[in-house]
Length: 270
Image (cartoon, rainbow, N blue to C red):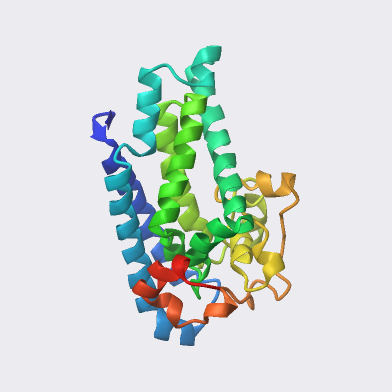
């Protein structure tokens, strides 16, 4: 699958590497939470575990679902499936509609992963991370990545989403997730303006709070409108942005940074 002469996986890899490198540098120079004891004791192992989970999830997905989201869009287009082609919606408008609908679908999937016990068992791998930074955005169990792809594929086929729009959405989703998980301090005026449109690090960090009422909020990854529309938006953590505690209390800080423990978490009781 070539886009402007470049294979789809290469586009995604270039975008991922660029966003990761930039955000890593920004985290080092403008950290929101400075906790030396956490950084020194856990960061190297956390990063190794989170990046390993990313690699395992990516390989697993390519084996089980080799076409990925963009391939599904090309397949749907070849068979003229979907509401957008059936209604004769122009290409540019189709792309915009598909992007927004996919973003809502990801928000809805995220809500379901907290509300449905069987999905929460898998999703808690993500929330068990004792720290929150750009690698937390990569810490999704392979089963969750597969279920997410199946869900997105269904939406893509039902819509008849243009392949280019799907590729752009996947790139923005990955970069946006790394951005809003980043341990990054933004200038207050910039942060307030940004969160009117997109999910910022301060906004999403509340979702990773150890406090249940705060975990049950701010589900968005890209657009911030969905949490406002459905009354799941929380503006500030009760403890304040600089004192917020993240992770899941039940698992502490040591076990979740172990790769084998994290991969087995969905199959553990409690």
